[in-house]
Each structure stands twice: as C-alpha cells, then as structure tokens.
Length: 106
Image (cartoon, rainbow, N blue to C red):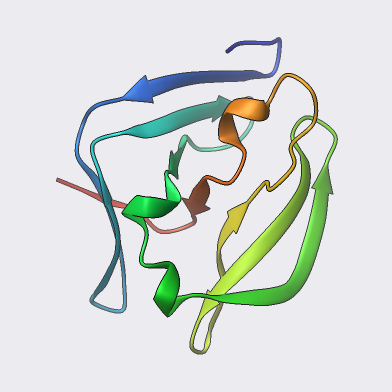
C-alpha cells in the first residue's frame, strides 16, 4: 500500500519489542509503515504480541491518514503501543495490528 504520505510493506525480518526487559512482541510477519516526518514503525499481528500483558489506555487519538487510535499500557509504562481497530479507507491492512514506540530488532 502506498500514498503520498504513507508507504506500507511486509517485513519478514525478525522484529522484537522489549520494554523494561519484558519481551512483548516477536514476529517475522510485521507490516513496516513509513510515514513522512516519522520514524519507521512495525505493525505486529496481535497473535505475535503479548496482549495479556497490555491494558487498554484511556488515551485515544485521531490521525487523518490512518483513523482513530486505541493505546495500550504496560503497568506504569503508559501508552507504549497503539492500534487502529477500524482504520480509514485505504489503510485496512493495519486493522488490529499493534505498533510500539520502543523497538529492539534481532
């Protein structure tokens, strides 16, 4: 998927996310999202994320290029991840996937 602002492509490279020494995500099937003005982000399938450790945050935002965002926290580490449950038209590929602010790749 590609538009003037966002490019998405599948990544088969192993990508992991650790927060405070806890492995939260580990996947060889992420979507890498490149958005003008932002660092690259990997969107993980939920089955590759320890959703049992995350809690839904009260924070929500809206991106005109992707849609409404739901955030997740890990204990006192607030809003460390987000997801577009129902993204706008053209961004359906990231629906339900989870992205993180902190990423450690292997």
